[in-house]
Length: 227
Ligand code: URA
Image 1 (tube, protein in one colour):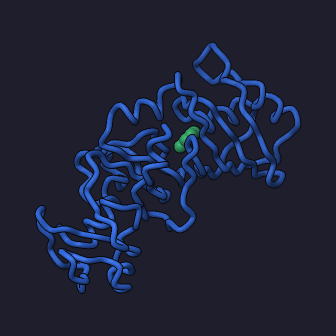
Image 2 (cartoon, helix red, strand yellow; image 1 turned 60 degrees about the horizontal axis):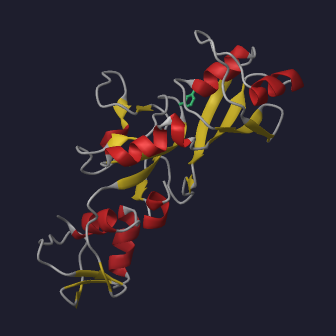
Image 3 (cartoon, protein in one colour; image 1 turned 90 degrees about the vertical axis):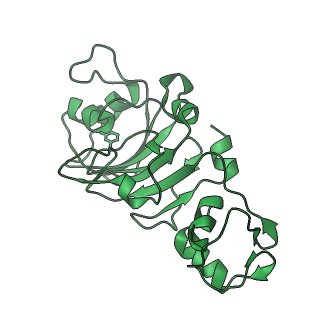
């Protein structure tokens, strides 16, 4: 495995920051300062960053800044897949999909139990979205969203949700469940329409604003252990 790839798998550094750490001479291989991001390392090599020994974790836990136009599945003939953005993604799956046109935080992992905790309704993991609407949100629509609305094709209302206004047509929405196309269906049920949707956080994990659309990094242990 290349050294920069190893660093981005074993730490929360992106590939770019891993290369920077190598240039800054913070990385050593068997006690020698590493010179090249492209250097191939072996299982037996001792790699340190700032004198701390690095090991590859058993499972992978990743946050991705999903760009628009990508799907969260592997088998869509018409769209690129988020899995193409992450290196060595064969063993990964998505913990909570976003629609192709939605941007923002996507979590990927190789640990099925962990993704179950993130997505299962029983764990009531908050999800925060920045929502842009086609029309200004009326007070009545806001009250409906906050109290719960009946989605098309369902008979029980959505759980109460929290709204925070940003402007007439933009708001921050906190949900405690994750039904299929939930945000768009909730606003459609009130007679409005979502024209842009961006996920900012899942539980306590907030999309890192150093990540540009399409970039990813590993979660820190504190981030993945708290689920
Ligand atoms: N709700 C939606 O409608 N779409 C998403 O992508 C996520 C939540």
